[in-house]
Image 1: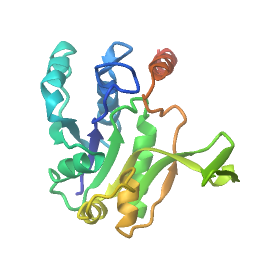
Image 2: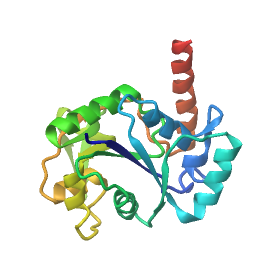
Image 3: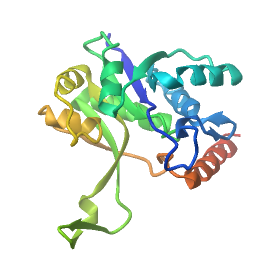
Image 4: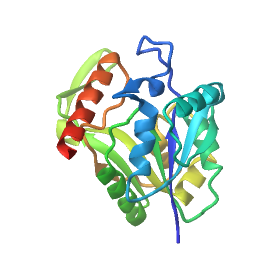
Length: 229
């Protein structure tokens, strides 16, 4: 029987946050962002084996945080590279099950819900991959060569994570040489010749990027806790 895996990519810095601590380690409702993210996958029905891709320089700091918060779920710690491409490739090489489904998820998307995780794994099993994305709620304009043009909003999707792939797709994709056009794993897999399949995402599945995102995440998590109590 094939197994599920989830590679959690934690390579961000605190630059846009205006902090010296990378955003994946900032506290949201008493826990570092990264712990919320890992727990979302750990608690899903899909029960993936977790691989955390983290830069070597932060391994000791992360272990200290785990001790402080008594965080002891099972996962494999991989050494992330200078780029997302290198980090995912390093984590992928730790997987030996050629029939597995592998999710790649941003460490700084702690609000992903278990139902969406499970639905994405199911679609990937059927179609080869599943890329979580949401329709744009805003009007879109493209600026090119100094000229702006309106795009059809209904045809525009904002890509999120997780992005889930069958093993063979990631295997072929990460044999490629790195290119600047690889903005996410879907672009790497697409460049390897595979068709990309979208699955409807969740507007609450925000990426923690700016200080105000922490406040938004705390409100959403508190709302979920209140709803579950």
